[in-house]
Amino acid sequence: MSLFSQDRIENLLPRDGVVPYYGKIFSAEEANRYFQYLLQHISWKNDEAVIFGKHFITKRKVAWYAAKEFSYTYSGTSKTALPWTKELLQLKSITEQLTGEKYNSCLLNLYHDGDEGMAWHSDDEKSLGKNASIASLSFGAERKFCFKHKTTKEMVCLLLEHGSLLEMKGTTQANWWHRLPKTVKISTPRINLTFRSMAGA
Image 1 (tube, helix red, strand yellow):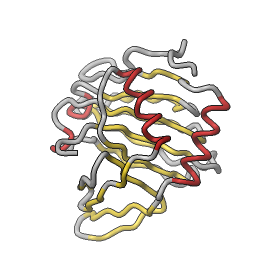
Image 2 (tube, one colour):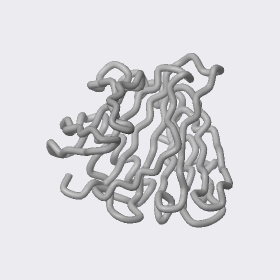
Image 3 (cartoon, rainbow, N blue to C red):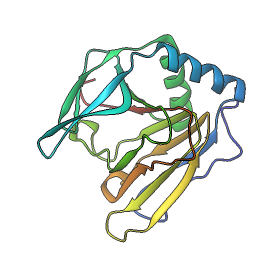
């Protein structure tokens, strides 16, 4: 397993946050194997959100796993965690080795194609704690991912590769938004795992 990529970037952001990009941390064969497992064996459900008082159900699917039945609330809706699977624990351990952090939960996203994305937002819920590390693994279709500074509006974008790891930590969530823009160029699925440490999980 290629746990240390030659493509590592220490910090993608010019200021006010820390976002290391570790590049591809798995071989193509390993990445393909995990992608197929996640696609077929994770308990995917359509995501829900309450925006300006209206209830929305997204095409994008999500799943929430943790060490115990921990509840996580965002976008006005709550989810109760499912127990870890062996494969998710493997991915968590690999991620912890690289980042030097400890995580107790994972929010997974399934984007079926480029028509599904994520608008500008910050992962700044109080349950995450201040300046916490969030580690993001990507499998499947390679997608553009962008950051925008909340004050200066400057942007930083990169292509998240199949089998790659990105970490957001320090004051990133306080000072930057991030998003996964939609694109007509992508017709295949992408799976994203965001490992976090939730208070009480």
